Length: 166
Image 1 (cartoon, rainbow, N blue to C red):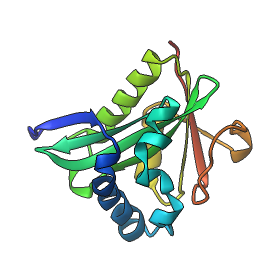
Image 2: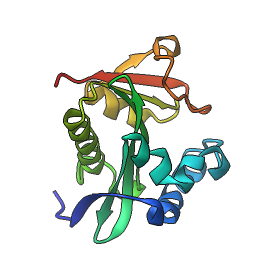
Image 3: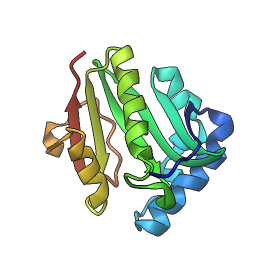
């Protein structure tokens, strides 16, 4: 196991450019997801879209370099949408466990804030992401099983749910 200087911290609007510079190339270049920054206006105002609604947005940094993100969009109803889970290619996998640590941070926040239902949408081509969520006890659900208040992203076509016991 490699020893890295990993920190997970909340991020705010002054981090927007750095977040966009991490996420867009992963979406567009690595996975060919047809999405632009215009289709993700939440990334231009993290504070209004996440923090002010009772959610949060975290960054994983290695030696100060942004290498991963995860966000929680509070949807009310003791539920949330997991959003913007990305880890830079060079830092993926069990060797660093960055995705796992980001998810654990989000789950801990849910428990502290009485959020018992976590929903997420993803795209069918992200097979490693599907395995990761399933390994972490998320259940694949049909789009018709999403609650009416789940804010669906147009590109998403696979959906997962995790129930937390508090």
